[in-house]
Length: 63
Image (cartoon, rainbow, N blue to C red):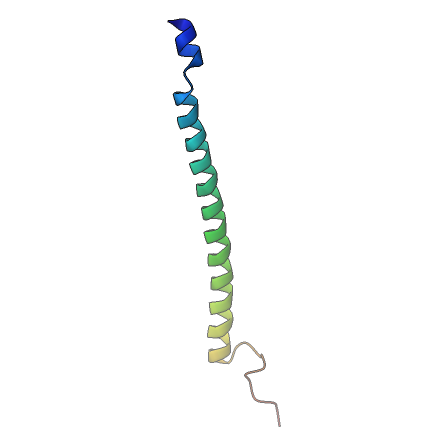
């Protein structure tokens, strides 16, 4: 009975799938966080440019 239990790999397979799912989840969270930060920076720059606070290329040249 003990030898049959030790040879049974179905539990190990489930654990492996769980670890794969956890790794994919961590990767997704990392990518979403990075993209969110970049989007926030971009939208802040656009809002500042529209408000005239950016001083970027969209502002007319001084005369």
